[in-house]
Length: 139
Image 1 (cartoon, helix red, strand yellow):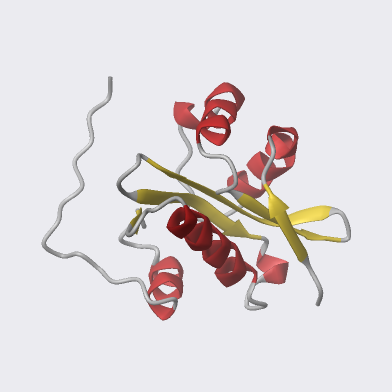
Image 2 (cartoon, helix red, strand yellow):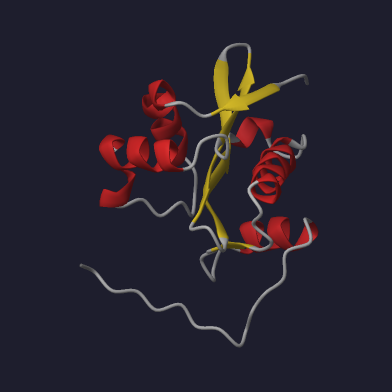
């Protein structure tokens, strides 16, 4: 099944948000409102992508960096289009963009119960960091 990829743009927001909302184990918050995503994309140009099949977005990934480490958020592929290499292609594009920006390591947060996601990321060469614990603070 052929598909193409291109940079995620803010005009894709509604369709991408629909994909995220319909994908299991995607944690959305206030940080995913259109204004925040627009700001994120403008600070991180050329790092977030969508996959398109017949003019319909079937995959999306949000990626950025802080100048030192990269981070991937919200990789989603429509269930009908999984196991076709779309997720892997989107991740590769993000990592190539980060490498071009001089970033040497990237992180992803995966829910502990998301066995499908954990298997995908490990198959792609990502490794667990059991010595680290994620802490958050709501401002």
